[in-house]
Length: 489
Image 1 (cartoon, rainbow, N blue to C red):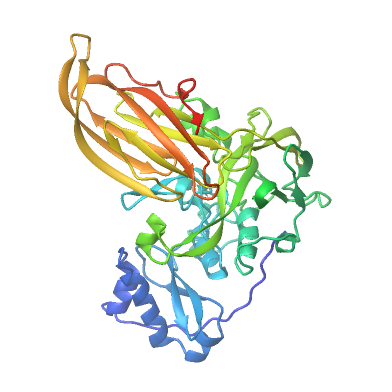
Image 2 (image 1 turned 90 degrees about the vertical axis):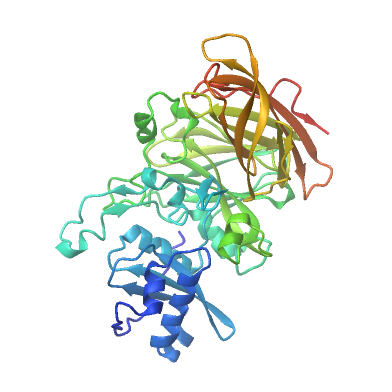
């Protein structure tokens, strides 16, 4: 089941002056220029015996004072690159597990978008993996009772529990030393299921260790050698600190009772689907956000969840090249039975909009493609056309445009300047407007192209009404693109 066994040794502590420049920069100097990581490397070189660094496969540095943020840095030792994790003795064990994951070679699973330093990125995108929980930390990393018998000074260390490493990330981790192509040997501890176009297969999965005859996950391979990982995730009250204890479907719609819970199933118990993808490997923090790095790395990308128990009854369909569907057939205390089917469809794209405030000034629009291998999107609205954006790319822009605004409460339209801010991230664009006490129509058009399957393209358009007068969509609704607007070309 992908268990890692490690060994190591503890070196004597090092006492530093409180104003040591490397110590101050490593502990407090979190900035985009990476000076904190450079300072951490300098500390390791100053105080660790060369033999200890030379023989290590990874290093964990624990400070006795609070740190601005736990992080991991790369340290060049001869021809090797070591991962050095830096934490405080006050860092709780979920974050410690995350940083140790980097030392072992785990990456951040991609998927859901998060805003970092003013840009939207899909890093930290899987809420089902301790390596990706920054996207939904409050939902899946939850307070837990103190461990029975634990010493008082350890109570703080165990105050938070989060999800364990996803099995999809374990498979991606096994791919990284074997180049781009994944073979069944990379996931020999998991079943390997091949589904041809037009075919289907049924698999039964479990998350309960006592059901030893059932697999914990399955690797699904479809046409064009695209691969996905299906696994069951749900809390297990029989365990002590249950690392999946925060997976609770009730949490989200108890907090937002005015919304349909079926719209947000990103942190509940269920059959979880990740895609195995080859993405650019960032070589600096700025490239981590924009994904302009030239190196590539295999990553697990979160796609969606079929909720358990089966009352949610939602299928998960792949959003990229292979039009295939994972459908829950039944579930019980032992596990879940899933039907995987692959169909042949014409490449297409649909748009969906959601109003995220009560005034209609903040609207998100998503593009969804089927039949694309690696789609890129170009958004166009209010006379502005954005460049094509790929996975992880972001674009932010603010401008003023003239619009016929209808005043609140009715009355004749008047031509007014409207300030618009857009923030696009691959397949989603966020619109912020200030219509000065009224509403106005806005058309959003998007083009999709496939930079692997050349010639595959589609266009779609959606009409919105922004502002306080007539919201474009009520919270929880999802207006689709107009009939005929999602046309392949």
